[in-house]
Length: 436
Image 1 (spheres, helix red, strand yellow):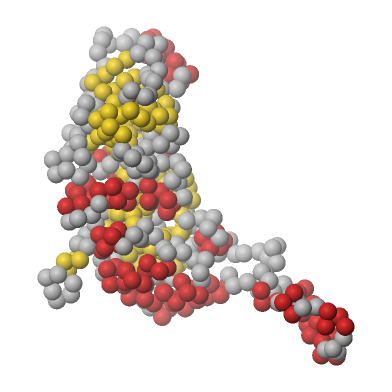
Image 2 (cartoon, rainbow, N blue to C red):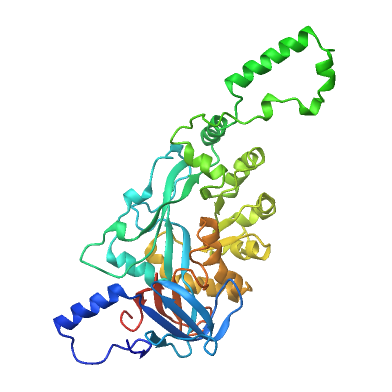
């Protein structure tokens, strides 16, 4: 194959291909990985230093090399896309979206026991919705059911190029069970519900152990001064309360996902919509040191920063600024948590996908208010991937990761910068030149 070079946004030149040629080309494409070399002024890797005069080499939907143009060998068969003065960053990742669901608002007041619920089975959407998500720069979204109690399993989706008149939800799904969604509101009934949940998961001594401990107590009551008792140090004697439950003990299917969160096998997302909700749930964090889901906090999160940080939990916050009650003092919780070094994922101020379009301008506003630009970019790329346990797949420009990219006309947080192209899994899902 011959090397091809195309200017950014240009259409392939030449005569209209005949049907036979199209079929032959499709056969070749199916047999050979597609290789694309993006040439840009700067590639912001997020995981490391930015690269100037950069090449991002993509093969078969994976990044294979990121480096300076002088150091990257471009294969002869690669399509070379010269982006001129453009910048490349990783695509945005939403850790807790309600896009592609019928749910528009969250409800943390209920006591749903939905450990066997999968939101992947409830996805709805249209190509217009896919387009709006892609235009906002999102290459991955964790679609999440939000209810009180255990809401159910989230699923990871990504926008895809249009194919056919009707969107098939399964075409979007990357992972059916990407996290467990939970919710809590400061109500006595909700506290009792969670107390019961954790009570069901408390380790209990096995029946055989209880009998053995009982026989031991009887024996010691008959004789407490025998040589065997004297020869056995106290710290070596088994204690029933320190032993875990029998390995073969069965856990209710609806409780198993919560067990997986406790054991760090499944990411957890806990919606605490108000500072009061956190204050009421805080005793559970002290009683359950293994339970450290990512916390979805509301606009008054600035009130509890000094209490959230010691838990070691990561948080999801919107970019919204709020006023302190009865004052003109503006607080920006996201900025305060970033400054405090808490792992933060930033999300739009609205849960409606059509409102995602202004998200990048709100990110720029955070930078204008004093936030570090690198920290803000990390909060919409790599940090949410770490929360979801997929940081080895996407979230930064590193060899071996999925080619999820955004092409910008310049610095992403400059007021005049435009989003030019969005690439998800190596496929262009938004192109300003074709879809202004």
